[in-house]
Each structure stands twice: as structure tokens, then as C-alpha cells.
Length: 157
Image 1 (spheres, one colour):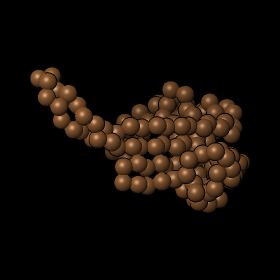
Image 2: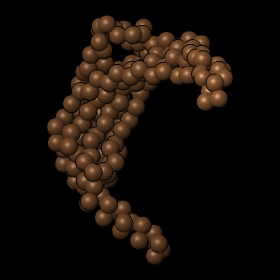
Image 3: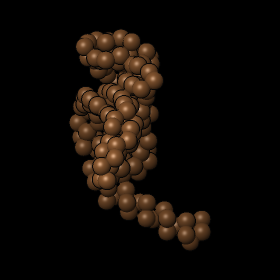
């Protein structure tokens, strides 16, 4: 290991101590295609690659609808022209699946559980001007540090 590598490694260890550490997260769900009201079964596997201190572990169920429409815009000189404008509507359902977590380097933790897709939700849709997309994400909330995240795109029919 060269001098610069040693400096880099030392800086990373210092950052780990200050921010609560680092790790790796893997996120698995039972399938990718769901119906409204169905449960998503998940497994979150966390591996500490340094001292890891997390405030909590979350699962986010996120939907986003994007609509592109043509609007008429008046310019400062009084002329009008048509432009495409995009409108976004998002909803986030947050589930705390584990409280505070402290792990030493090399430790692993597995969290399993289930969350419910709302029964009255919009289905996934990919149209010419409108899309409605769904994601589910595992989030290890590291205070004052970079959260450990893993995201899956799902279809709701």
C-alpha cells in the first residue's frame, strides 16, 4: 500500500467514525408484480464494513405520476407560444422496520417483514403523456452520514 493509499484509508476510517460508519445493504422482495392491497414481503441484509450506527431502518413505498401537457405561455413582449410542461405528483409511504442499529465491522444483520400496498392506489401506467411508476426502497438511516439504500422498481396492476 502506497502513501496516498494509506492517507485515503485513514481518511475513510475517520469519516466512518464521524458519520456513524459504512456498510452494504442488499434488498430482496418476494416478487416484482403486485395488485392493490397485496403485501410486499422483504428481506434487508446489512453488512457493516466499518463501525455502523444507524438511527433506524426504513422501507419506502413510493409512487410518482408524471404528466406532460402543452400550455400556452405569454412572453414578456406580449407574444404567446406553446410549450410542453411536466407536472409531478408523488406519494411516499414510509415504514420503520427496525429502530436504532449499532454494528461493528464485519457484523451482519438480516431484517424481514411485510408492508402493504394501499388498496385504493393508482396502477402502474406508461402512456404517451402520462406515466405512473412505483418503487420500493430499503433505507438504512445513518445520521449525518450517507444512508445505505437499495431500490426496486415494481409494477402495480
